[in-house]
Image (cartoon, rainbow, N blue to C red):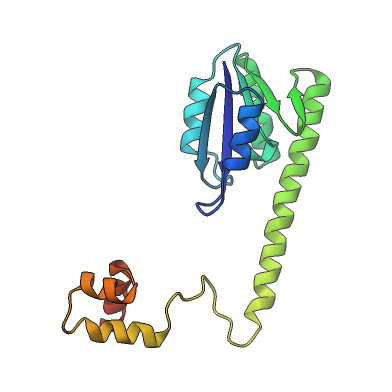
Length: 184
């Protein structure tokens, strides 16, 4: 059987491009998830690993989809080779259980980890520079202005949360959080 695995790191990212590539590669069943690759214990990947058996093929679009560190890649691939599972990385080709195949895996896994580390480093540098700017606030930008929230809170005097949410477009959960925040 040919299994595919697709993963993106955040809920806001899309899996569609990977899914299309995996289908075009002839996968018969695809496991997909939106879960950070920095953690080894990813639910769908774990399910896939327990499903794979001798003679199966695992297809991923890129090596970093299933392993973000060199050690993790080598360990996972070695375990799969020992179980008789073939591995096809679409941007690399088949990874063979040969001296040359293992060398290529090690080199590419090293580059994947290096790339990930560079991204983290650049992100941290960007945050450090941004923190020095006046008016910087960390995190997601506020969805509603203070004026909008004040108006919504005022409306709660005569209306239910549901009614205020309907009138203002501010969700009930956001209203409840804002009321709690103001009480403390």
